[in-house]
Amino acid sequence: MPDLADGDSVEVKGSGAKPYVLKNVGGVYSCTCPAWRNAGGAIDRRTCKHLKGLRGEAVELARIGAPAGATGATKPAVPKASKAGPKASSEDGEESAEQAPPLLLAHVYEPDVDPTGWWMSEKLDGVRAYWDGKRFVSRLGNVYHAPEWFTAGLPDFTLDGELWLDRKAFQRTVSVVRRQDGGDAWRQIRFLVFDAPGHDGDFEARMRHYHAELERRRPAFASAHAHEICAGPEHLQRELVRVEALGGEGLMLRRPGSRYEVGRSHTLLKVKRFHDDEARVVGHQAGTGKHKGRLGALLVELRDGTRFALGTGLSDADRNAPPEVGTIVTFRYQELSDGGVPRFPSFVGVRHDVAWQPSAAVTKKPGR
Image (cartoon, rainbow, N blue to C red):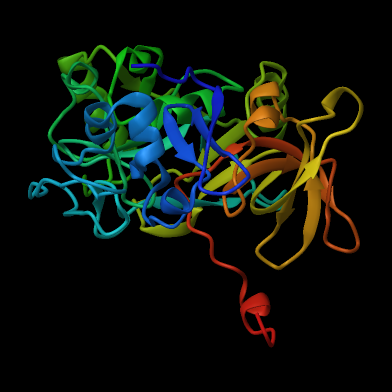
């Protein structure tokens, strides 16, 4: 059967005058037909008759995890979860937890905080992953289908870490870990561990715990993420400059003696010279000049309703197959203008691990 290479698209005749466009972006297949668009659920677990016609019905049903003989954009059967981790649910169309895992989240570092004695590590530009003892779960509770050979040797207790490929490789990482087939592309990924949420000790005790276990088990694709004690503000700034020069995203600070808390805590701080945020795609701006005939910029909206164009940082593949309207993307910027618009924004990638929740000021506006 013919297939689409990653980043390719093809047109097929539809019921009207305009053809439908079939795409493959990082192993996620889509179609512009109404049946695919209105199917609901996760976009990587939908199919339609056009995708089945192109790739073969058996191949498509296997991709989305549906039983043989199923029709339409069938939601896949989902196995029951073990007691070691969150329960599974097919409510959103993919194997997922009924609720998000209990993760510790960071606040932004402010200069009035003295970092002396805090644990310092590089902020990884990867995908946050919670190992529940049997599988990887995203911040929203969706399961990452890592191959068994990738998870071999991991302990049966919970770990907090990052599925990481390389600096400046966020989008490539996402394209691998979002795949349903758990293929050899996972050999590029490493699971870098930075905490053990289920351990009841302070941060130092938790570090000793997971370091010792990883050293004993020696899993092929997992290791402990490096931490060092910060000697003071000057040390923090030197390390920040060094990491950013290597293409890194920034630093993380953990307060010594701190417990693992669920939700945002001032015991965990992220240190960056550039800010980042998420926005929702609300439209596509046509390109001009060398980008004529493809995407020029994404028209996006912040949670407070502020809209702007996001054109810098897009790859050729992004411009040829842009994120669809409604997609959540992440971007970096230098500062906000007086009107609240990000200055010098640059596209980073598509986010699948965050939910879109407009700010209260937006949700209270009449007619919205």
